[in-house]
Image (tube, rainbow, N blue to C red):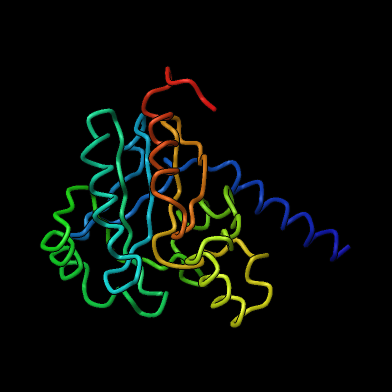
Length: 207
């Protein structure tokens, strides 16, 4: 009976996560004010965990270019700095924001630092990972192979888990709140832009 009980509890937990909507979550902005993601209903979202001292930090420039190009069409980038990967996002959110505006002139919303994995992970990321697990790195790509080698040395089965693997992992969310795609930091920004174009312009023919 105990096994049946725990199985039922586990199933209820999965159903609870799947029944949630991205618009149910609240986050804190860069000045500590609570923001409901329901404020972004009707927008195409790219949710990103970032860091300021990472090899992928120059992606801020590419992200800002996407924002400037598509924000008029209802596209938003939600930036969540995270210090869990090599401690590459040190400092306060105010210091991080100052760095990003000074070096990349970012205009998109930047939120308070959070954890994206582990006991203290933000519920938003628990939900995102439940919707789109890790799809693997392209090991034919030099950066993808580097990431795969590095992470596999630490955990031979790292790719079997849905955890966020590194800074600048991205989730694309549709206007009606569906988590459409997860992109790893090594994925090409041109592929991400193509997917954004399809979402902001539904009339565009899909491949």
